[in-house]
Image (cartoon, rainbow, N blue to C red; front, side):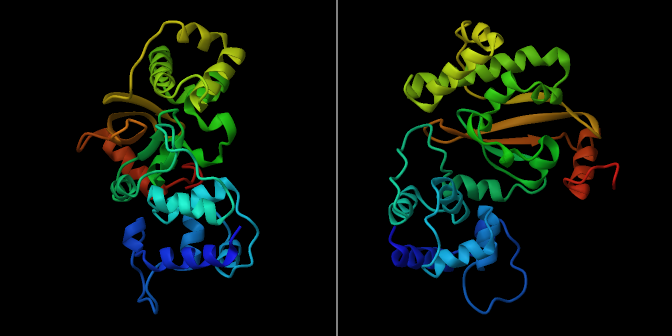
Length: 280
């Protein structure tokens, strides 16, 4: 780990960012250019003290998970992300369709979606980013670790994952998720993370094994969804998908028809945020 070069690099990237670059309000006049240290720390999900120590060349070696969060928070390109990893004493992640580093261009679009639920998903169904309304609608996906980061894995191992869909729609949703996983498996191969996910699911879920053997293959597509929110009840939303060039990541946007009941529910969700409606 090269602490001094790492600190220099972090300071320079932070100084080059404006609040609007990362979806933050400009706020009060700033004495120096760039984001504040506490803003970078909050975006990366780490303590301000930890980040300050990294910039002061006295922090511990960051984990790969922490570096990934920093790269995303600071909107680093793939080359900058790889350089960050090497300064911190880690090998740069391989660049494959299963890469979980979100491109700055995709994040710029995502950052501007404040009035409707939005997510950035990997081809394995991992939530790489979600906005405030997305978390309020479907829950905070950042809490998941390991294989459970994949929505496909949770679908076949955690019964609560299906409660967001009406009973009659669950079989269809399960097949769509498996079809998407097969597309990722076909691209990345059996020795990839997709292959690991398939093998583990076949071990723990006979239902998954049965659906997997149907040989369905499909990527995410635009759809009309009926979701069940625990406090708001049924919400009918249109689902639009924007893919990266290699089809490895998807920007998923959920919208409601103007002046519809669903639009009113999303507006209420925006006001209350992630607080429970009963408490509000």
